[in-house]
Image 1 (spheres, helix red, strand yellow):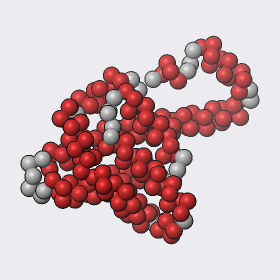
Image 2 (image 1 turned 90 degrees about the vertical axis):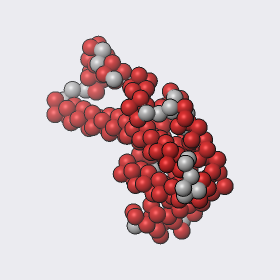
Image 3 (image 1 turned 30 degrees about the vertical axis):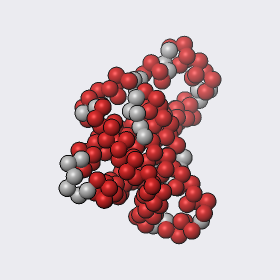
Length: 195
């Protein structure tokens, strides 16, 4: 994934400097409620997944809250630059090592959108001129964020599928892994050239 690709995504979404300012305002609006938002969306997610009983396990709840805090902080504080691309790619990989699947991230987006809409209405006023543009900016940020996280998921899934297929190939053909890797190296078949 190159910055040219992500720049095109930002252009498609319509992300601009006014959006960065609105996200900063939204973040300031919810600073005092941030822990409450994390608690609320984690409870709703646990209810949806049928894992409410696990929320009584302090270690599980702390880990889930930590992942959700990292996800939401990254979204709200995101610079949507090259460093952000790297951070979200790393975070996408981290999600795979937790109990959250990509489908859960999609659900989290909707739960969070509803919670932040209510919070913004309360802070900015239901009929405020800034409410709709702020929520539109939040939707753009969700789209950018989900694109990056999904990209990380796909790369990891594809790498896992390649590993499984290679293991099968080596088992069926009797090739040694070392011989295969030497052939790949000699031909210049590596992941960097394929991106």
